[in-house]
Figure 1 (cartoon, rainbow, N blue to C red):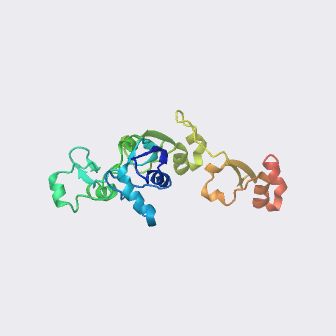
Figure 2 (figure 1 turned 135 degrees about the vertical axis):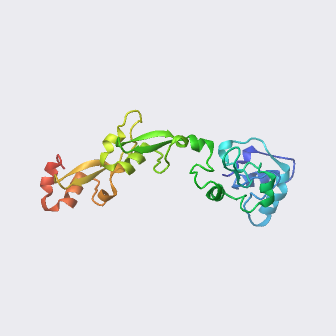
Length: 243
C-alpha cells in the first residue's frame, strides 16, 4: 500500500517536503529497518532522492492494517517445540551449519520435506483455530469445527454453502437447514431451470444451480419455457404457475 505523507516526519532538510510528497505515491512492498531495498526501482532524481533522504525520515505513526509484516528468516523444521516449520530465527546451530535441506524460503518447501504427513504444517495459529465445515455423510448434512480438531482434512470448506453444494447437491434444503449452523448464504440472484419430468420451469437460487443445469438456466420463467419447452411453451407456463 502507498504510505501517506501525513505519517512521515522529516528532519529539517531542503528536500523533506518533496520526499514526503513523493512517498505518498510510492508503494513499499517490503520494509527492513536500516535498508531501502523495499522501495521499487524508479528512474531519475526521484529514486536517488528517496534513497538518500530516507535516513532523515522517521515514521510518526503506523497503522497495522496498512502493511503486511513478515519475517525475513528462513523456514526450518522445529521438531521439539512447535512441531512444524517456522521462521522465527531460532534455528539450532547445527541447522544453520548444514543449511541445505534444512532451511527454506517458504513454509511449503520445508513442510513438503519434513512434515509431508501434516496438512496443517506451516499454518498460523489463527488459521488452525478457524472454523471449517465438513460433510457428515451418514446424516446428509455438514458439521463445523476448528480446523485443528478435524480428524480428516479430505473434505474441508470455508462455508456451509460451499460444503452443502459440493457434498449434498441433491439435498440442499436439508443440508442448509441443519440446526445451529445459520443456514446457507446466497447472492440473492434467482434463475429459472427446467424440470423435464413435470414439464415446467422453477425458480432456483443461482448459488444452488448444479453445473449440469447451468446451460438450461434462464433469467425469467418465460425465457426458460421458451428455450427448454419450445414445442409447448404455453403448457410449460401453465405448469409453472404462469409466465
